[in-house]
Length: 595
Ligand code: ACO
Ligand code: LMR
Image (cartoon, rainbow, N blue to C red; front, side, top):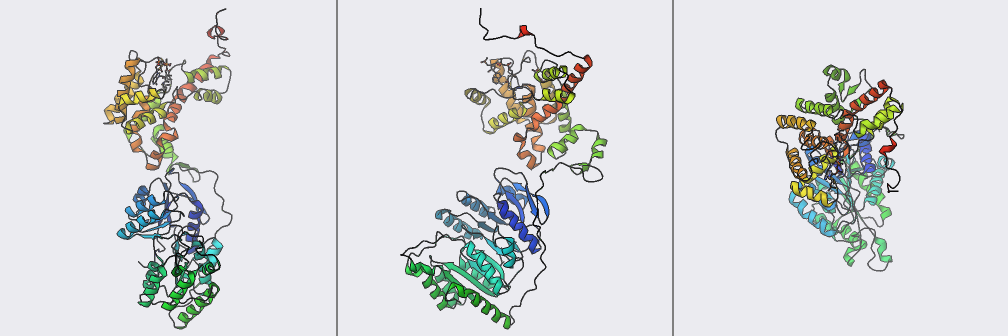
């Protein structure tokens, strides 16, 4: 393939660089193609990204790893690497290993030893590298890397939305943007442009792109710019002399002003300094000119040479002016929606849970089926649904003395309305009461994943001075077992086969109960660990990703317990309970010292 990109090229963007991603999508609209970004890789969060395609806002998929990006979007074979200079190298090497076809790396300041390693690996695998220290590349009318081409106005003025007949390659990103416009103003515009970056060891060379352009039938002439420093122009001059480059090559090496400075002036790029007289801009311009390149006297002469070359090609019938397409409008007043929803929709004739009409859930008559759809955006197996329903029943109430019920009773007796009294009860759910489910799931999961033996886990928690979430009960113990735990456990063991985390938690319980009989695996603990075993594997990837952070499991306790708390509130209201006042004799006043 002699052009790097086509109108169906798809990219993976590494890093949530939304301004650049939006620019790529705006380019796509102008070029009349479908979105060119398949997904973003963000190692920190897989939350989808709000983005515009034209006037329409949509959610762009985000994944945590390049591995997942390649698996989910195998047709996306271009990687746009916005990783920082520190991590850019690892991303490139992984991209090469995962058979990405083109990798553009934007970061500046990447260590030269890193780039030298990439180049060796890329040559082995046939990967094309662009950068580092670059804005990227663009195939006109087909695909744009990140911010290449600059603002929308500049992009349109540079005619990047449709193909011309000029192949461009240069080092500097800023200079490439300038040249795209100059070329568009003095010819039919570019077919493809690449800024290889200003480092001393760029991932690809000027010559490699020039030779591609030589092979590409849609390219009639080539423009290259370079700068002071390095000796690649000698290879280009050689290729010209050997007639490996036969298309007109217009060249300009910037940095001629260096002679007015003391020796060894360093320009903006890492590679832009002349280590010898052969690396000066003047020497390289002369060399190229002698080899047959069209080199102006000064930079200001470039437009004229471009225009003359293009006109000559036109006169010979080799190229013609392209038709200018009608450009679609990019709305200037796009506003991102304030609220985002991915679980239900109320816009049609009938509201939906997911994409299923509510009436279907009503017919099914299953609360847990509804819950699975609205909480986890999925349908669970019948056994898992039954188990969830059993959990809701098990935690619905535990008598009037427990923290939540007691608080609600006090609030109801103060004549608070139902919802306020419910909130008062729910607000007691926390790390010690009913709200230890998620923490238990996570603590046991982490310990198990780290390979800690049950004893090592207990010891580690003790050393940190922390209680094990999901262990211990105020009144239940090995002598007074909690039937909720035994009933749920029996069902789980009967219906779900292997329960590795639950088994691990039961081993922990064996250790803690030898210390004190009430340090049992409590109802929070069992729900937590058994749902890691049973529920987590059934959840869609994006939901499973945030399983331990979202608070789903404490949510289950709160949902189930709401039934009981409301029961207590109605009970108090029926009983017309008077205002509760805690008995003074049950309070130890002051410091509690003897008189
Ligand atoms: N992990 C390790 N040691 C514990 C734990 C635990 N989870 N819970 C209590 N202990 C230890 C205490 O440090 C104490 O040790 P010590 O005698 O050497 O000082 C001893 O066991 C007894 O502690 P108490 O505070 O008397 O226990 P209590 O019966 O008051 O606490 C409670 C019960 C609050 C549930 C406690 O076990 C706990 O905090 N557990 C973790 C949180 C949790 O799982 N809560 C959910 C409970 S179930 C529900 O609410 C529906
Ligand atoms: C509950 O479910 O509320 C109980 O396990 C807590 C308790 O102290 O009984």
